[in-house]
Image (tube, rainbow, N blue to C red; front, side, top):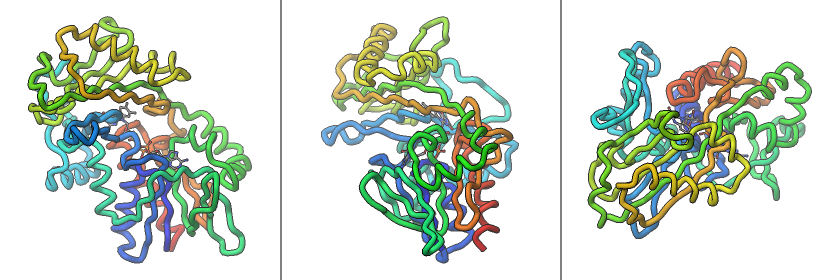
Length: 351
Ligand SMILES: Cc1cc2nc3c(=O)[nH]c(=O)nc-3n(C[C@H](O)[C@H](O)[C@H](O)COP(=O)(O)OP(=O)(O)OC[C@H]3O[C@@H](n4cnc5c(N)ncnc54)[C@H](O)[C@@H]3O)c2cc1C
């Protein structure tokens, strides 16, 4: 059997891994993503070729495990055993909430390394820079065909879409849109899914800068302290590498994100950069590069009712929507649980 997964984020990676475990070599997994790299919102952005070891996590920052959750603990343990994650050091951090039942982990090689790790374990065919705009039912062979703006790209007897639902509704045309339109309840539930928005700015430093003059590694900025900046981290130190090349990540409040969501990310990014230097006057300005990111769909603030983990739009051939739009929360642990539910549903439909 062949399965196409649209989206190369963590939900797609874990669904792929679970499908591989269930079906072994009998399944072909083909992934498409519009981006140039693997990770989705668990992405790591690198400086230029001249400074290749300098990077920042622009989306998700660290992973949180609920100790009492025996299911997700297995995934975390595998990542620990294979040295993909390690404990987040809370020394010199400001504002991280403590919870006796939670443990935080950091990814020393960048948060995207976690997604890459699961895709590698799953053995998938990865196709990047492929923006899918259409999914159509092909009655001649009973498969779904996926296309971009120019041409048909591929087809399979099962297609799983892990794109945030607001993007599905505005971007994907063809049979997928008709199937959603025909099911009034599903359509209504999908249209209520909402995401917050944020901007992120990454500052990269050359190896010659050996001290940023900042005493903390992570700083959750209180609303009363700043109306725009909400999360700051010396990214290399967050990953337990307190040595050059240094990098800093700043993420804004969701209120600031909502206010500027239609504005140009470069203009707003420059504004945020100035705010960082005003807020941290002692911070070194000797940067080699800056990257700006607008997270229009950052984290789910209203998910699909009852968080089923997925929605099936068509059973045979299978067309499923999955990802954090259907999860209990917008984080790694909830994506694992939603992926498990998706695969439980896929299995009986494909055997
Ligand atoms: C700023 C920020 C901070 C966060 N902090 C944390 C944190 O600290 N800890 C934590 O656990 N979680 C955090 N999260 C949430 C976490 O990143 C998400 O819940 C998780 O990454 C969602 O994964 P996903 O695979 O469901 O979706 P995504 O990662 O969004 O994957 C969907 C993929 O689909 C692709 N795509 C979209 N449209 C198309 C198309 N038409 N054709 C082809 N490909 C398409 C996208 O490029 C993307 O790669 C944060 C998120 C953000 C944005």
